[in-house]
Image (tube, rainbow, N blue to C red; front, side):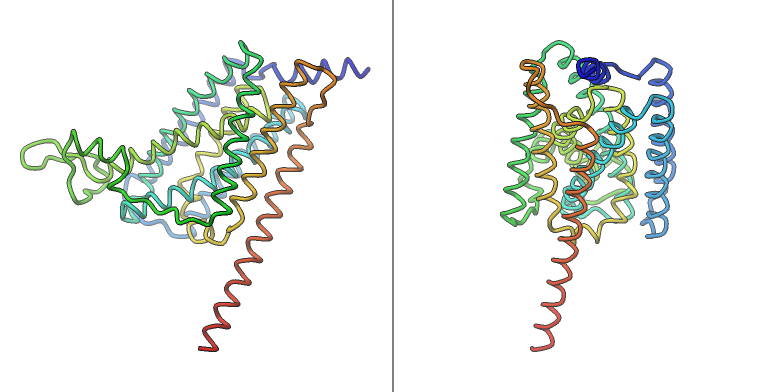
Length: 340
């Protein structure tokens, strides 16, 4: 009985539910949502909190409902893997928003143009992660040690994220020192002012880049780093390339609206880096154990349901401690102000 259960779990970890029809329908749905986002942002404006909150709720409701359909259609194993992967990717995307805020502030992007920049970032991230997912699937199919490699990447990333969280260093960006910016300015002229949503304009009789083009390049550069972290992380939850793509796509599509909802609140999540470090380390260990299990069957694996509980638990704890710490800091500042 135990051997049959183990064989079933192994088969579910490697088999994909992604039929050609399901892949085509999912990609078409993602593209339709992206086009809708593009139409929303075609007129530059600074969205109100109500508008951003409504779009965020919409982009959270869709993947939740999709997960219910997956659970009903393909079973609880795929449903739990999907929801666990989505929680991981959404958590990492929230951390990515910290970097987006820093980049947009460093380039002094007007608030009415930030939606378009974020949408460019989402488009680039979707393409890059699609490539990384395909490469990861091919590597997993061809090389058993890929899980060990992914685990090592996540453990190294966890150490870096943890050190950054403990150091409390200033993560400001000097635009003029960015390699991508210096390279572009070396080979192509750039105007000093933004020109709406245009990436290029005619200036002094020639085609010239606008600062918005530099921002787009900087955002796309960060997408590469995020893809290196996020794709191995979700492969630590499921080996199904379709579920990996679906969780990444749904987590990314809501970033544009989520940015404006969490822009102020992110400063209060002071312990988020600690939590993400623990999550990445946990998934890294899970991947290493999975690889070891393929070599030495006696090595235990971490069930997906347990992974979901650990990840949600870590996020809940760091959210509570962050809000408590921020509240205590606010009270202390008010007390000092009253004494002075």
